[in-house]
Length: 576
Ligand code: FES
Image 1 (cartoon, rainbow, N blue to C red):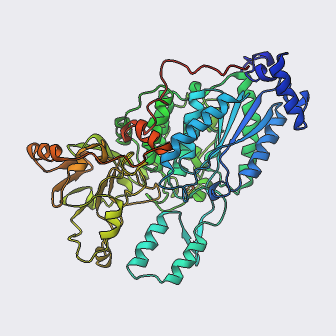
Image 2: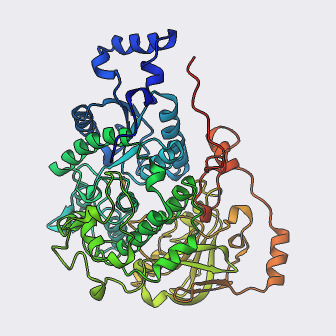
Image 3: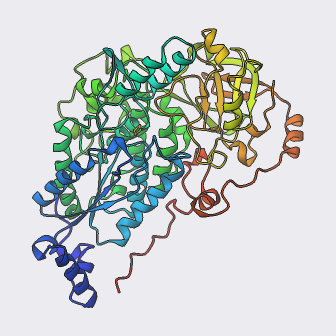
């Protein structure tokens, strides 16, 4: 691609290149740090937005990756500057990282806007960091490339492979059922996460990193490389080299993130058996790019694309196996008919050009459509009087016997109520019951926590029950499994129909017909709605209060209403 920009066209030229009082200050302060014109003069200034912190285990290799990205930037004639951003460590941030996804998106956007930046390397991976950083980068729309953290290595316990999340839930249930000891449980704790990198099941992190690549925001093949692999270091350096050229070419996120690119990402999401969280994130990302992506688009594509990646929780293997089997490009090679290979990507080539000779090396890990893991797509969008604006189920991780089910509701008013009563021997519940959790949505959680995989009552676990229909306005970890209806919209906290469900009400789920219905008359629901009382806001002040005032519902992506891209551009900062 021909160069479109000259050094005088660079955004950073306004800080470093002109001759006035302010630029004197910018140059003298760069010199204070030991740099001179050979470093910053007329070169693209590249921000490396780094979500490393001492409390994010998934990003513990980032200090080394930053040095490798800088090496690439220098090699290509750029000037790298590292800008730390909120780390959003999934295991530690409470009440949920989802409450802070938009915070990181704002931070990303404003870090870029307020500094002398020409191009951006986004360094993330742990669940919300991928959508957050891309959302911020799209809104700012300077050349940007995503460097995914990569998955950690397989877990191990006494020679048995362990997968993040999935095996935590599995062995927690076995411990509660009395099938493993506390000592076994302790050994599993020490073996389930044994290298830097993100969760290595097809959770939200692996899903979103893969979708960033499918969207065209990473170098080809980047998302599947395990974090400790030396190929990951070389990919980081190559991304550093590439972003410098992207600045000269003026290749921006909105050139890449088209409606066709989002369709590609949704198709890949279905073939991966990706996390249900991807729906909320892709909708929010698309809306930042000015594309009104509806959750119904997921359902349309889901009808056509089978699950091909045999990765937990929908399948058997882990991300390390996926990489050896050919990785994301291998997967895309067996689903060509569902992709628009003409979409442009960050390296200036099309998605199709980047395929090269990609293929599949282990056909049990990446299946052909004829031998799909599941013939139906991984995610279904349900509607009915219980979810007028939609709800979501990961059918590929649910028990097929429960896809069509009617049962009486066992209702929990909120998470604490559920935690207090779920194991009560007197709880009136059977395997046919439908567990309902209220107040777990964007406002009710708040932050729409990953509570949607409600634990099964202990007395049913002891009877051998391993799955039940569960319904909430919460999200679910991508590493979870079970017949969990999620993202019910509108949520119960704002008076959605979920708020009106009472103990014993019959609920109908039909995944194939896409139905979620509360078998209660309209008159009775109207009577209950009239008696319903709006709960008090959770946060009286601070970020939580701002969040509550502006977050949108799940089917709209849970972005802040004022962050969605409108017609008017935010002005560039004045430099006085
Ligand atoms: Fe970071 Fe799962 S905890 S990706």
